Length: 211
Image (cartoon, rainbow, N blue to C red):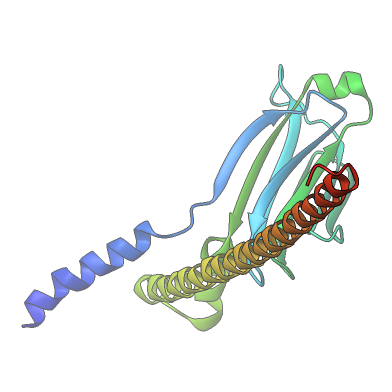
């Protein structure tokens, strides 16, 4: 029985591992003096990332820039001045799009600057090596701890999707109610106008002795 459970447990671990939110890494040219990127982050989600600015024609040549990370309300969560690279690590205080802006010292510098950025959220943003050292965990225990965090992240994501669906449903219901009220008001106005028009024509024809 135990031999049968082992492959099933291994398959479950592989399935959960496939659901791990992968860290996104990409490069882009600044082009303009200020370049901003947006990342969608859930509420109370751990965020970790790094950036490095360099000359696109000479990758080994760093370029100093300013970096500013803001939450959806415009509050500053990370800032770095005059640096070619940096790391950020924080827990989001609200759901929405977080904006990370890079600013070069002038337009000419921006034209030749490329930025390499890494961004991860949820379980992938956690330093599992530090956790393993702190709690004296072996590789399997660390992986189980990470998978537990993944399950929690998936659960939170499903709850987030449910909240969005509820908000969308409320918006749709409110819109339908407003449309219904508008249609009723329009029907009342049309009926009122038709009644007034009949009354006016009747009075007009009587005055002209047509009726």
